[in-house]
Length: 65
Image (cartoon, rainbow, N blue to C red):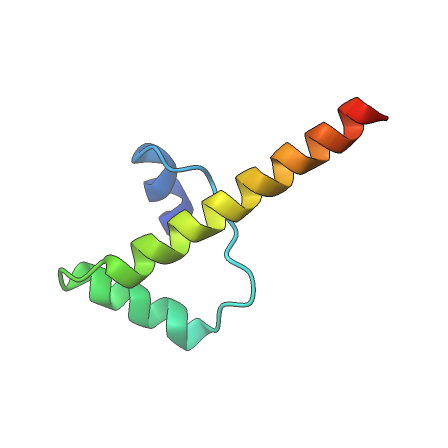
């Protein structure tokens, strides 16, 4: 929950990263804290993009109905 609050305060969309193992999550957070945020940022941005595309297509399909 702390990560979600931080991301929203930094201007990111709230995301739910699915199929992410606890060990992977902890490694990404640890690496980001150690000054290497690449994997964490990439995961968040890819998840945001996927969610925005899903939202767009749901809206398009609803508008066409």
